[in-house]
Length: 234
Image (cartoon, rainbow, N blue to C red; front, side, top):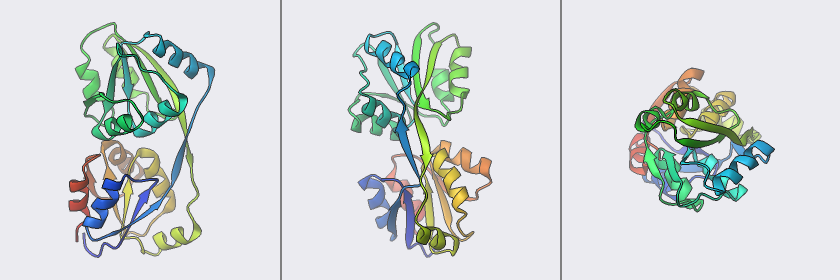
């Protein structure tokens, strides 16, 4: 990837990600394309009350946005309830939100988790985005688990500044990081120039980008700044 100068990092990137972009000789440009809003509907609040009362054997968290929503909602995870994160990035977000010690399972849609949970009849809380793919819950139920899937947050688009839109469409951005499926959808709406390298962070972002027909320059694992720096180097 040559000529990398300005790289769009949607949202608030971690210092490690910003440092990785600089290590690749690029300038990080942090601009949010989406924001998440924690929900407070009765079904979700009832599920969180049951969680605090040790009603669940397992809590599965699929994204950093879910971790942040749990923190905002004041969710209590008892010591007797196992916390599982899909991907290292989610595990890091859980720890930052005050929920350390999660077991990390790889897998873009949680297939690895569904295969790993071999004990039938356990009770699982699955807080997700309101637009989450139901595939994970369906896989777990097919394996005999009792799954309570609840919408923990909504994803809301953020209109980017007009000058950034113009820069993206004129080819002024060398690369854009796709950090989630929702971000991939907003990047498709942004319609950057074909010369802009699109780098998916994680398999979920990759899968959504491919579904949208976006041409990816690279896919890197979440929470792996070295891989990101390597993908962005000229």
